[in-house]
Every structure is written in structure tokens, then in C-alpha cells.
Image (cartoon, rainbow, N blue to C red; front, top):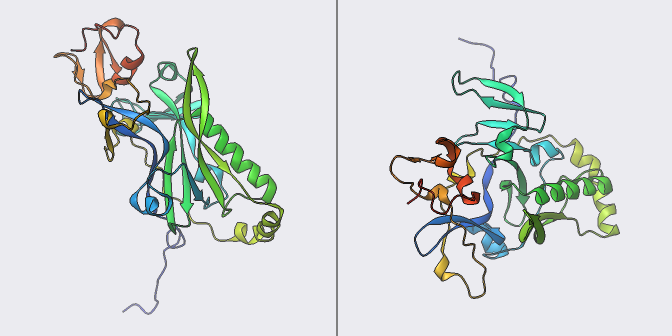
Length: 300
């Protein structure tokens, strides 16, 4: 018989973690009259039912709080490359990157960025973890973005709040979709980027300042790691028919070749053998911007 009772494990029992309650998306999958699916940006947040119940089916702003005063935990950012598979294959910070060697299956370090970024196969990516108090304070929602403007504006918004209050954790904030004009390849486009807004007046600031020390001293809960799965392989949870789009809505005519079948002998899942690059394997997504796409023998 053991006379001593042990009820805790060192290095484990003291750990605390908030659960992930769900994902909030910035777009949906649309389907054109030919039945081809493609990703389509929306001007509103695509939210789960419990969030829609409070903020509506197509909210353009959400009342949120950031659970921790640690930017690396609540808004991790990196360059990411997935290849044609589901899992993350390479992750970098602009100077160094770590990737899985396809032969040894071991983690290896290399310089970053590399040619994959120029080819559009690797992209900047960030995941914002937020609490939505009007829905639940029992966990966090994940919002993933690859927008340059969104990443800059969220970093800026959170650091501005920290400069005002000494923290951004547990501060009432508004997360908004903002119509933003961008320029790419000399083409003007409009996207709906993310901004974090603090709407407090001086009385609100003083009240929050009085609580800053308590918030920063509170025991820290870990957050769930972001779901690092290839965004192109996200399951289709919302599908909109192009022919059913509301009148006046601008619907992208770009075809997403990642969902299309190539001609026999060329199809390789999310990759395709490119006749214009010496019959080498390339991601299907690169075909969308290829100047040789029309009439390409790789496609029916």
C-alpha cells in the first residue's frame, strides 16, 4: 500500500489551455454555372451559427477581446508553404525557414525567402485568436488571413492599444472588414481587409488603466495552436451558386484550377505537369495567373 498520495504531475498539471470554439472565415466557396468551385472573398465575416445569432448572418464587424497580452500567441505570422498536400511543409520568417526534407522526413533549416515565394506557392499567413464575449468567454475563435494590409493593420491596432493602456489583452475591441483599394500588376482592386479598432473615450481609458496590473498578473492560459492545414483544401461548409448571386453583386470570373481535372497524363491531385516549364510539376493554383493558360494542352 502507498501511504503517500500523489495528485499532480510536475510540468503537466500546472498547464492551462483555452479551447478553440470554431473558425471565422473571410470568404466562401462559390460555384459557377459549369459547376467549378472557386474561392470567393466576401465583404463580411463568414461566421458559425452561434455568432450569427448575435451579430447577424453577414456581419461586417465583431465585438472581440484578445485573450492574452502576447502578440506571438494571439497573432502568429509567418511565410507558409503547403505544396499539394494537406499539412504544412515549410515555415519561415523572411530570413530563415524550417522545412520537412522529402527524403529524410526530418526538419531542416534553409534561407528564407526562396523561389517558392516569387512563384506564389509560398504565402504570408497570420492567424488571429479572439474571444467574442457576447457569444462565449469559454474559448477562442480562429481567423486566418494572408492579406498584407490586414497583417499590418492588426499589428498596428494592437500595438496602439498597448501604448494607450499598457496592454491589449481583455480590452473591448471592434474587428472590422474595411474596403481597401489595392494595386497588383498595375490593376486596381478592392478587398475587404481587417482592422482592430478601440472606440473608448478618456473615461474608458482610465477605467481600463486601473485594471491593467491585475490583467497582466493573472495566470496565463495557453491558446490552441492554429490549424495548419492547406487553406486550399478547406472543407466546403458554404457553397454559393454564381447564378444565385444577388443583383449587382460582382462575382469573380476567375476559374480555380485547383479543383479541376487536367487532361489524362497531366493530373496529379493539387499539382499539374506544366508543358511550358519543361514538363515539371507545378501547383494548379499557379495556372490561374499563367499567360499561357488559354489553349494549354494540360487542360481540357
